Amino acid sequence: KNMRTVPTQTEYNPQNDTSFVSTEQIMSTSQPVPSTQNQSNINVNMAPLKAMLFIDGTWLYYTLHRRGIIERKYGRNWRAKYSFDWTELPRVICEEMQKQVVTQGWDSTSTMDGNAAQRPVEIVRACVFTSYKKNTMKNSDRVMMFEDMSEAGYDVHIMETVGDGEKCIDIQLAVEMLHYATVPSAYDVAILLSGDKDFLPALIRTRQKARKVAIVSSKMGCNQALMQTPNIKDYDIVWIEDHLDRLIMPLSAERRARKGASGEISVFTVAKVIRDMIQAYADEEGQLSSRDVGRGLKQLTIGDISLLEDIKATYGGIRLFVDGHAPDVFEIHEKPRDPDALPNEFWLSLPENSDAVLAEMGKRTEFSEIESIFLRDYLAHRKNVSAPKVEAGPSSGAMTSIEPLKLPADLTVDYSVYKVADLKERCRERGLPVSGTKAALLERVQADVEEEKRRLEEEQKKKLMQVPIRHRATARIDPGLQMKLERMDNIDPALTDHISSLIKEYIHACGGKTGSRDLGRYLATNKAYNTGKYVSALQEVKEVYGSLVNFIMANSDTFSKGRTILTDVGKQYGFPVWVRKEGERFDGRSSNMSGD
View 1: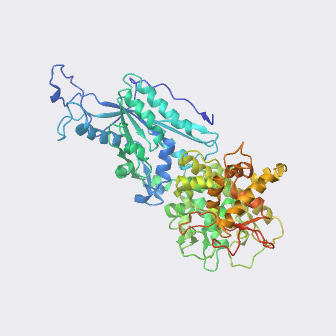
View 2: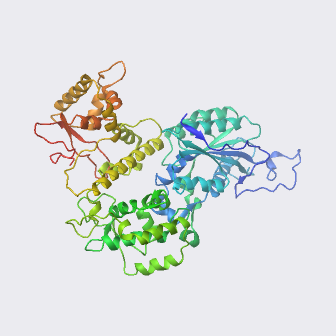
View 3: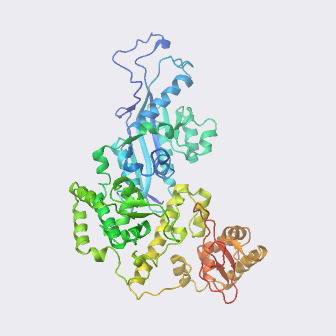
């Protein structure tokens, strides 16, 4: 119900297929084999094992780009120097399966010594199933990956996500696999490229149709059920990590220089804008923080998106852009220069020859029409466009206009390293659905973070239009809850009293202070006020208020909360909650809390 199909694929005809064949054993078929020939001597004209490759595209994207299996070997900015060779992947799979056929197959050509005739493996079709939202940028890593696969000959089935779930993708892949299992001569072996255990029923049914099953996966993202469940596969799992030397290929010098050309803006233009910012707003040591650079870039737009969004989608972020495309234009400094610096924050400065390098880069650049328009407007209004015009502050030469906006820690954490349980906890705290795969949970959390950032930036823009006034920090409240509370004047006070009494009871039992995680678990074990509608008090809080943090904020006359606690690796650990004392102000950042 949440998915909408974008054009359907043509029906597969086994007689008219394009094949990926193993490079080691391409047999000659010029002479037919007599029917009386002894089968033990067959070494030519052997019919290949026909296979079809079914790829869980969403799982594959997160495995390659989020789980770090390529970064560990080729570095964080590998996309700037390398690309994934999609034409090589089927060949690698064929060759690995063929080796196993020789030693593991149940036929007269299989021997333990591997000297018998090797039956070739042929992938006749590779099907990819994925989805992404309509507003996903066309030059993002996700979209470009599937475009590359399509150009390499894969049948890419793309669905449009209009909700939060992607379960229809799993269903479509399973249906396709089982459908061709019933088509005579469609394939002998079904190869699943995924690590999701949801495909177990489809694999079992496929084997019941007298088809063999193979699995290709990643050691970083393969569910234990696929490795340990008996009778679901006929081959050992082929691990992607074991073949990265063949699958990752260096970019040519020309292609590397033009990497990112699919976006609307070139390397030269991005480098020039960042260089202008450093010249205008660097501190006394000639350095500007990545946080300030990012906020400045976000105020510039090219087409319908901000320049920062374009850099993230095309190059992967500011740091990856500098490391991979402009290492001679900028110098990166890791030393913290700000007590409020974020864990991944760095500083940029300009080396002596940066202008000469940039000028040479500009000579080699071919500008698109939209980029030319951007540069014309930017150069004409650079002083007004580079950063908002505001009163000079008491700090050094840095960009004082962006100092009032400091994102909370929970909006700067890298959620891609979170486990499923942690992502679900984040969803609960933000009042988001907690169902779905890790990919769906991660996308949901990241979308919420981006929405919250946009809200804070809109507030910042409004403040810049007014006379600068230094306000004390205030707790954030979910804008969705704010609108909901305005419409819900008829909330039963008895419900609020019931939840408040449970929270007070638990805080008292904990000695006057507790953490949000433990408090949530306690509410989950207690009855709701409206027992006929809700299973637990925690569910009632989420349905009525959106999340526990919103309940605390909405009842700030009774409770107070501290700043979100982070571990030394930046992982969230909830926030402290206590009963508010008389005269105590509520600002969500109490200085007397251990997590502050």
